[in-house]
Length: 108
Image (cartoon, rainbow, N blue to C red):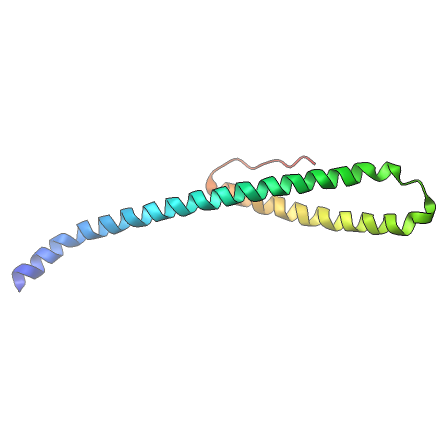
């Protein structure tokens, strides 16, 4: 009994090392998965930013004062979207910091 307990004691560091390696492998797989998901989300975000840029660029076409109510509504929608996009950009930059990658500059 003492003999078995003694060898169990010596065996524990190896068990812990193996478990640590297993956990590290799982963490790396999860990190890669999350990084791929974030890259996909950023691509969608950049497309949405481009679409918003087009909408803003089209404002010079609004010359009919009879449509002012619709234009004002559109401006408010864009303003709201810009605030949401600013927050999303901050979240992406924060996550990039966690992954050790440089922060993306969203120039639009």
